[in-house]
Length: 247
Image (cartoon, rainbow, N blue to C red; front, side, top):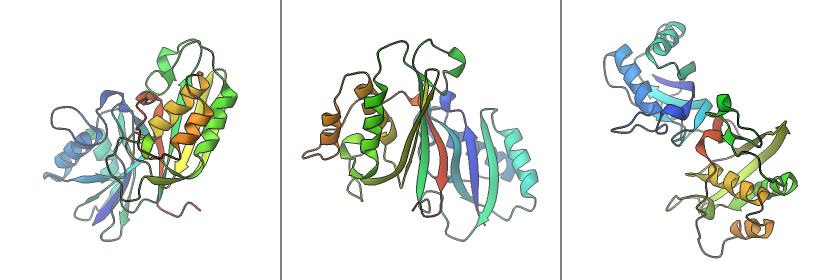
């Protein structure tokens, strides 16, 4: 049987989702827990590879196993085996050949950051920038430039891409209150570091270190010049993975 699970995790203690040989990862912890329950190696396939320090509320993964008779009891046992900063929220049977990554039609990420006095209790989920001049209007205008279909080759470290680095950002919204800002972005797919670079560029514009014209040029590149600045990982959360058309 193929099963699809939704998992939430705090990424602060891990070197990303993907299993690593010498450092802790989300995939590694889940596969270790499944080995305890099934008494054999069980590989999982994540819908995406979140970076070190990045968290998730709705990451998904799939795996193959014999039929699980009591899914509620299985979830209870799995979560008892996992560390307290990882929780599998749901499990469902899927059709043969289903794969969490290749069947996904899109994802929603959020990016949160704070201006002003630091809030230590938020530090694992909110990037802290302290008190500094910030142009919220220009920041918001930068976000608007991302919406739609664009060539994001300068917004990823990925060497090659089967879709020529083109992605469709269907929605991007900004909310703010009392110095806390949150951006939600929905797209049909995101490449390595793409969201963090998008946010890093928007923050640079907000802090007066980059212009809107430069952003427009980066979205219509004549030659590839990968943007090096990434927004801090702790502000990024994978909120949801979609398995139905976005439009």
